[in-house]
Image 1 (cartoon, rainbow, N blue to C red):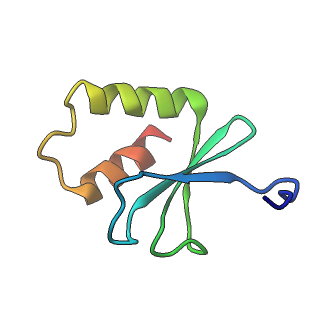
Image 2 (tube, rainbow, N blue to C red):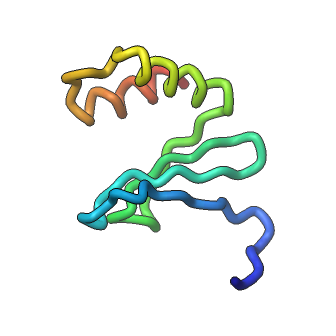
Length: 80
């Protein structure tokens, strides 16, 4: 595996991503980044690790069950 440039995030995508249009999660220092794998050069949302933990807890608690993806994105922007 090649070396990573300084300041470049480490990206992870779900193992069940079949379409190539999935959410990728990146880490860079104390930040968690979220982007679309369909547009890896596009914009991403940056959260602190604390904000990420709040989001994950809300997902696990079912706060987003039945919620459209756009509304989840809007929630992340409000969380900021």
